[in-house]
Length: 317
Picture 1 (cartoon, rainbow, N blue to C red):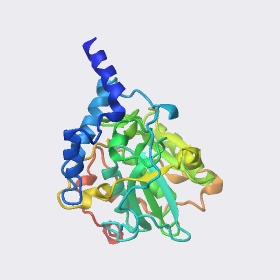
Picture 2 (picture 1 turned 30 degrees about the vertical axis):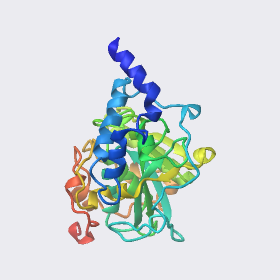
Picture 3 (picture 1 turned 120 degrees about the vertical axis):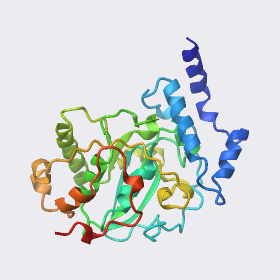
Picture 4 (picture 1 turned 45 degrees about the horizontal axis):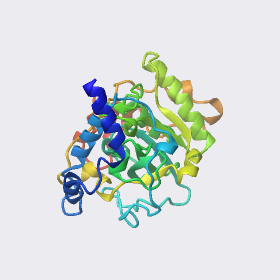
């Protein structure tokens, strides 16, 4: 009963638990300033997960009417910010390029897996997606009271890399059978999800999900699949995260943290699951040799890898 009462108290205060009026949170805000951007994200992440565990963990999503109110002002410091590794502007989408947005656990490692792909990636960014609060902050998203999941946005050139290659990296980089979390990171802000911008993306996500579920021994995949347009009424699917979170694992002093739980299971061959009418248009551009040499292995390991994109010569036969 004591635990239930504590959980109830925590839940009733989640939306304000990280108010800047708190001396503890003031230290976090200061620690995450430009002068010292890497000291405290782990503390907030751990506390957010503890709150979710105490309140029953894996408790599902809040409803839009329960979400905390946001703000009209977009995230400061993002306009003109360039990718720490690739050098391109985070906000730009060049003509002919496309976007992919997903969440599969802690966004630090998820983003790194994408910017390291050997070709076709213009930029990656971390942020908050598929929620109800306009322009949320990290504190707010960590409270589970915005409905967002930690997400990654990939801007890519479809002439150089296929959406299917990005999709395969997504599936193999985490355990999509976990509900509302990855590893020790629990709560709706760590849920697995992939959000489509057109019907081709939808069909490829759904077909690959069915194939990967079978590859995992028919364990049910819990990944959320939804249209980006579903979130227009809440201000949009995607909001950029704070500048200090962008390409976090590439920056000096970053803590090599990753909670993802790759299963060491490969997505079945493309020809076996892709709808026939999409096979020519969306065939993979990365050869199997790439996946054998650089594909995710069981347990998170991306934090140990170099920050630069993988060289094509490293897997050329």
